[in-house]
Each structure stands twice: as C-alpha cells, then as structure tokens.
Length: 274
Image 1 (cartoon, rainbow, N blue to C red):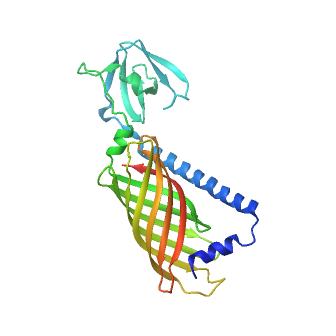
Image 2 (cartoon, one colour):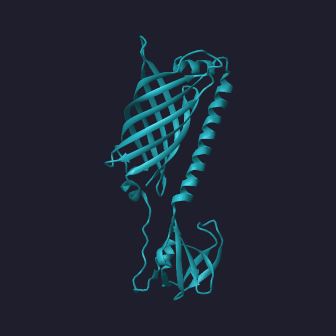
Image 3 (cartoon, rainbow, N blue to C red):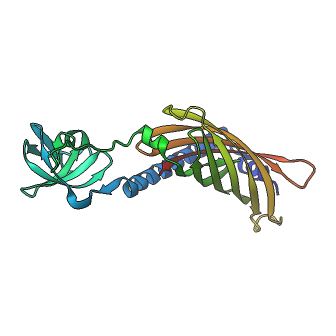
C-alpha cells in the first residue's frame, strides 16, 4: 500500500469546488489549533512572580492602573507621584501592583520604569524582544496541515547551536481514508537571516515512515521505510518568544520495490522558544 494511493482515493471523483472547501477547512482548523496552542503557551510561560514583592516609589506625575494586563482593559485608578506601590508579578509587558490603599491592578512596564526602588535607583525591566528570542537555544512547536491529501498533525523539538543552524527532531501523524502514516525524522535547519521578521529556512534530514492501512478496507501489511527529507519554509516573528512557522517538506521514500516514492507535506503552526 503506497502512501500516494490514499491521496488518489481521497481526491477521486471530487469536484473542484469540493477540493477547495476541503483545503480551506484544513487551513481554518490548523489556524484554530495553532491559536489555541499559542494562547495556552502564553498563559503558561509569560507570567513571572516578582520575588519578595519589591516596593517602588512613583517618580512621575502619575501611573495608570488597569483592571487587566493589556491596553484593552479600562483604567480605574491613577497612582500619584511619590506614592509607594508593591510589585506582585509580571505578565509580558505588564506588572501587577498594589497600592498602600489596597487597590490592585496592572501597569505597563514603560510607566513602571518611572519609579525607583528602596535603594534610590530607578527600576529597570528586561524587555522581551526579538534579540531575546534569538538568544534562546531550545524550541518546541506544534503544527497541522496536509500530507498527500491526509490530515496531518505534528510536533518539533529543536536545539539551536548557532543563530543559523538548528538540529531538529520532527514527529508527524497523518490520518487518511485508507491508511495512517507516522513520520519520525532528524534534520538540520539552516536559517540564513535569523534577524529578519519574516525569516526563510531550509531543511535536510532523514527518518522513518510507517504506513498502516485500514484493515477494514484493504488487506495490506504495515510497512516501514527509510526516507530522505528536504524542505523549506519561513518563521514569522510575532512577539516575545513566539513565531508562526510555515513549512513545506518533500520526502523521498526509499522502498524495497523497484522504484521509490515521493511524498509532499504542507504545515502551519506555532513555535515557542525557551
């Protein structure tokens, strides 16, 4: 049972309009999954407790206090000059503070830098930006897309040993009408311009493709084949430690039969660096 056989059955007899709707539905589902993963990662990793609840004195005319960590939340209080506040925790570019009167809310770090601590020195905050993202070594990503007409979900784990070269472990699961496929690969990714906001990359690697036919439809044995991988894509830097990742992979499957097979994969997902 070859991998392209499933794609042929999947597309056979479908009108062009149906194929377009299937493709758009896959893209929509992928974006929804990626957005949910991004929000979960942000919630899990972007909040940092401030040790000992440091205190600071306001050194500007006022600091706006909002009900939540974002400009979309309303301002409900203005912290006046020379007022002392307690710093509770930080979430991305927002700091949760408490006043001496017991009011608790969120202030932007740009305003909180207009304060000084108990030692009389102006407070400063580490701004998470693209330079910080480039300095990180490890990355993990989740993605979804299309593998020869089958729905595919995958994950990557990478280690950046230079700003341009990353070693990656890639895992993918594809579910089709007539067979399922699992792909495991080890690859090297070259990113020639890591400082660009939209940064292209190229991939080379090798791995294993396992194909499991649906035994209720066909009587074919499971198969495991070695594969060679080449691919290309782009990172789209979003904010803090997150990037959108668009990727195309071409697998040359080295079978035991007279001729090899070619498998194409398209994916969209999010990567987080740590």
